[in-house]
Length: 137
Image 1: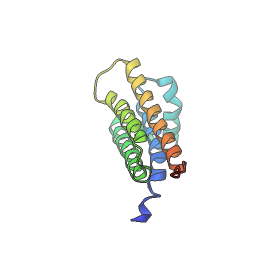
Image 2: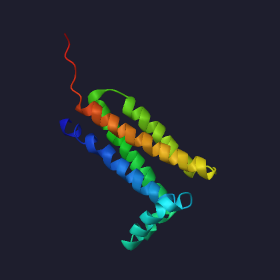
Image 3: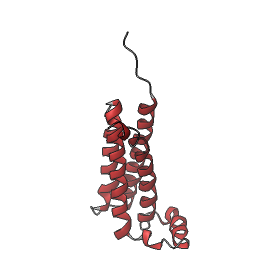
């Protein structure tokens, strides 16, 4: 199906935006100085329910799934696994702290490190998708 090739190009960027937003809303216990303005903004829009972990963690899983789906669809085109490897490491680092009791500093380090890896995977994917293949000599 030739129409499926272009669809993976933007899914991972949308997923990264979803991961950043949902992580900011679910870190109210660990980084209140950073998260308070974001939570106040969502509350003023009537989206106060996004601050609850019962809502934001499933959205976080959906955003990570969207990133992985976009990277897998783009992988079919360039056949380089670098972006998928970075995204899997980032997904593990971003999702693990929500399932284990950790110290606050380790929790925030893993979550923000996972976000950085997911963002790096998206940037690597853009570089791989826009790179021209080298012709054989």
